[in-house]
Length: 102
Image 1 (cartoon, rainbow, N blue to C red):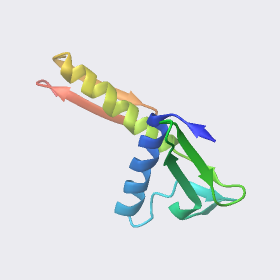
Image 2 (cartoon, rainbow, N blue to C red; image 1 turned 90 degrees about the horizontal axis):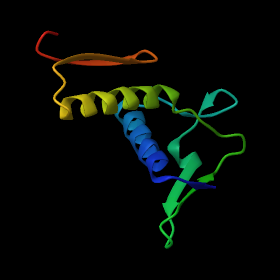
Image 3 (tube, rainbow, N blue to C red; image 1 turned 180 degrees about the vertical axis):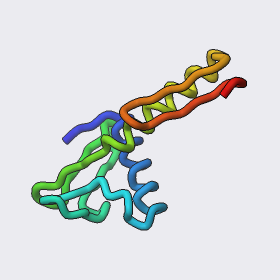
Image 4 (spheres, rainbow, N blue to C red; image 1 turned 90 degrees about the vertical axis):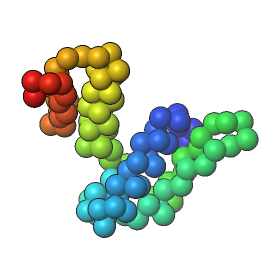
């Protein structure tokens, strides 16, 4: 299936977190059981499109927890770049804060 570059970026981050956590963060599952990242392949085609291929039947990609944290981080970065003085951002349990009064 064809996917957007930002989805590939999220997959690469998920793979990094999976490896850094010793597998504790396991976003690939089949019937509730964690699967290795070898169960999923993503490539860039000559056209520039990204193609995602599932290597296991019933494979689910669960990036919700990672994406809420990523969204919070991106919002905080935007606020920092806009020179916001004080802020707290919370996205579905993922939070960040910045400024002088915090």
